[in-house]
Length: 329
Image (cartoon, rainbow, N blue to C red; front, side, top):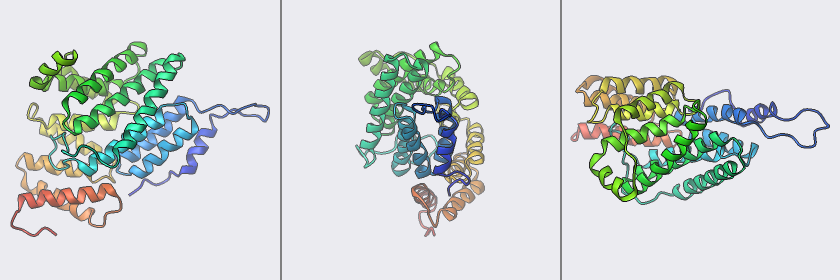
């Protein structure tokens, strides 16, 4: 279900506040990054709420409003990553990140094109000495998305290479502007996984000179992004919740709390109660586990979009896995 009260036309109205006034103005000014980010937050709200089409529409309007800004392209790539995630990932087990053995999906080329455009625009702004700190932030976020897709495919070396580039850009961003709290999502993910995937990382550190990390510092940085980030709180909570459910952490109640917060903030998206139900299953709580899965199955029975369709399949699979001799309706 789409959020109410926001139309494509409202985006133009918001951007109009940033345009130069007066008939004498030779050319209207493009919206400031602050104005663009205000619209981006609305798009991210829709994205995390499961309305990927609505989110992409807003991000494409941002591209039109300022064709030189990397922001709209970066965030459209983020929405496409979620599209790939929902269509290929394990949406049942909360601690699983790797999704599929498929080398590509039909969305991959567009995803990579968007990232290439965003990275080129970041580089151009840095060369022009234009909003340099934020340009490094967006550059780091683009490399983070590249690494997230490779990680989804369980491709260790491409993930590590993208993560190394991401880390360099994000460290530069916070060096220039410590207030760019969104950088700590990528830095936190890097620190956590470099420290917890020890066998693989030892080899990669030798192959590509991958800097070390810290599990505890990574969790702290992701918490900071979740609490104080501008564009990153929703996704930071998602990664934290999944990390707390991993065997290295086993903080299931903390993970449930974060997924319940996501359910409260993005209540149209059945993915969040699906994760809550899975965690109850993991903890041996049969009643909320079963009830949660069946609620998601019933809620998505008449799927309105690709997210509902994916969650319907996953809830059916989860119940069938628990009751292999029962016909699940």
